[in-house]
Image (cartoon, rainbow, N blue to C red; front, side, top):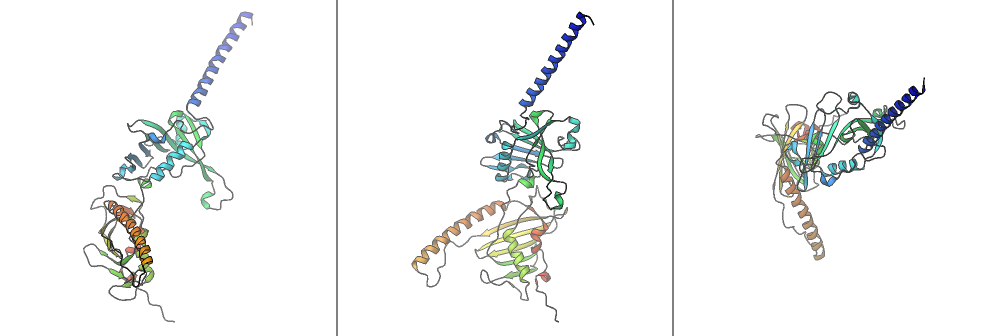
Length: 376
């Protein structure tokens, strides 16, 4: 090799090295710009106050959470009130999350990490979009497969392959960079029922309860003369006390899993109607019908009546006791009026409930009667 050829080789190496270095720094700049470096925030610059809408979508479901005045609503459920606590927790968590791992992953490999965009084939993740009041996108993420961590001290069978300790995430700003965060984000679902405010009616201090088919005579009716008194079948006969208590208690602890979207008259079978009268002069009418698809039930209810506005003084009541009891009565009445107003607002919806929630109300009369003990 002569001197001229040697100089040409040196110049070529310098040019190639410079190009490689430029590409390297370009990649580093893009990496830093994406916010995907280890220790960086997952959503740099994200401001919760700017969010007016959240959209979640996976391979099966989608939900839109919208901020309306001072409340959040679930659009796919006719504007039913959303659980503000759950929404706030999600946004705060995402603001605080930091990247613990970062990798370059080609588009063809994203489905393996369940990071494919929903609606574009298998291996779809959960897409989250945050938008402002004008509809502009503030942030966009795809949540993928959960990262499992072995825990030899966990005895549960479900933990044999590891417990969720993190999650793969594809930020929109990170291009082909996949990151890992240290939270599995288990609460993030695209199912509309997940985000509903689960406040429900509570029929308390029940005096009588009658259950039967809609438009027909009750199958059974139970009653008691005083609060905390013994339940009796209205038409006589031995009552199974546990069955009575289960039915009454369920009306005070009822919960639902979803709100029926556009329910129609052909969606469910003929309903069973439970009518509960309370010592507060309220009447709850609850209609329960099995859905024609699946094992769940539809439930609707109304509440009518007005609680007494004046307290009946007790016999021999002294002045000091009267003042205290009048104050307690006024406070209780205020809370009761507020609860009734909230329940009447909830009564315009039809709810989806599990069979276990309504099973105590579906019993036939024979199931409410105490069984005779066999003689030895």
